[in-house]
Image 1 (cartoon, rainbow, N blue to C red):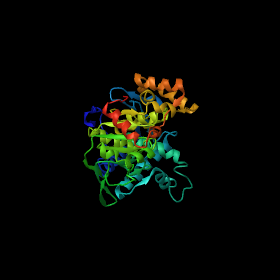
Image 2: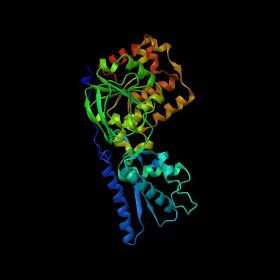
Image 3: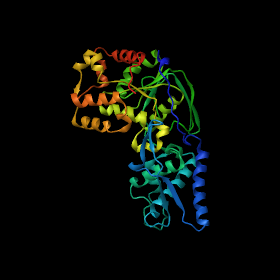
Image 4: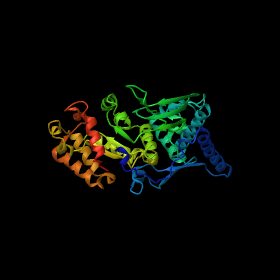
Length: 383
């Protein structure tokens, strides 16, 4: 059944993510050496990175995801307006190299506190006044070095849970652990922020990946062992998917596993799908690493109301914020080019109704499994 799902793939160059701490540390060292060479040549050291403003964010129809354009910005040490930011960037790079050498990890909040007062004991001057100063500079380094912050030993929040026929090998903190996602009980395996460095797939014996928006619905399907009956990998991002969760989905898709997404029938749930499929504007610089253009949407859709009579009684009124979000989505090039999605969004705007995926438990708790099985077998997907 599920093996018949079309297996598409993207075509875009990969980043240097996951190549190991020694490789990344060398990239940081080369960055410093280039600056020293500029000084030796009696020129001001510079730092160049891609411009991450809205004007340099594009939807690339050729690869199917949102990415940065070709515009760059240059930071020069001798420029009065740029000197502080230049120094801050170098300090972050130096500290990350130290983390890599020590095989130690922290959050971007931890990095901020490590560098807040680091100009010397005799100087009453902060290097960073607020974390809002350091965060975008971490992103600058990610872009300039073609890596993710996780490669710099900077963690983000863990978010997302997995169950299903997949075994991973995790090397972390000097230990090696084998994780069998069929044996994680009711809790599942919690997805870390870094699924590249020190982590590898040992075996995957699934036909497809099912991404379920809500944790409560994931628990319902996990209790029914939907992943075992349908031989799939069951993931919940628990709302909007984190970087680590999106990266894991991308890696599974790269192994030719079809990715199917199941969310609420409203603009917020649908945007969760589109962030997985096409990426997002705020993470455009990671498009190739976290977007999964080959993902397909199984539901819930407005047209399900016609196919499943009971849903007519279980719709709820859309709020003004839902309507506004739907209008915004219609303006996005990567969504408005799909006729079926335009129809869905316009139906929401016309009826001012929405449906939660939980409503599929109306007839009986196990009905949601029947719903998914039927729609997947009949390939009733939206692009």
